[in-house]
Image (tube, rainbow, N blue to C red; front, side, top):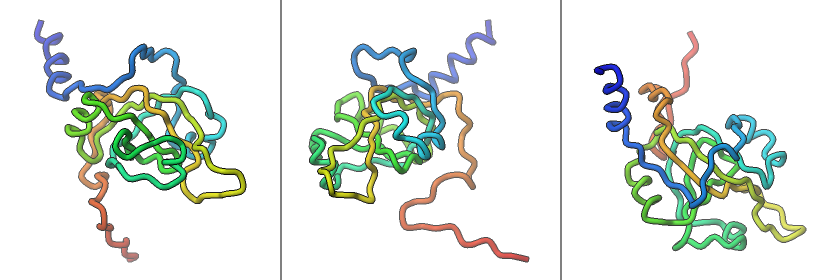
Length: 166
């Protein structure tokens, strides 16, 4: 009896707050590694993917090419992860706001969504991300290892000192 109670207690302490759209089915998503998405994101265009990442922050102001694609500052939010070349875009909701309030920098997440391309006028290049993940579901990754103190992301504006050679 005690062994079945302990995992339930651990899961309840971790907080299983999630955000998802109606009709969410995890079987429809292809599991990919963050590194794979960084290198070959174009191969996943218009496909549903799931990846494990770490929360690094949120952004509510967007560049012009993001706004031209229909994302408004008062209706959408960008969830920042270590995936730098693909923006994780989500429509604001009470459920998502509650999740974002509880997340701390470095918290492990499981992110589900569809890879899409921003509407960029032809002939106009941008150095910013060309693709985004249209968020359909996000949850805390209860099975991920917690970050070591040395692995935790530093606050904005802070850098680690360079390693000294002996």
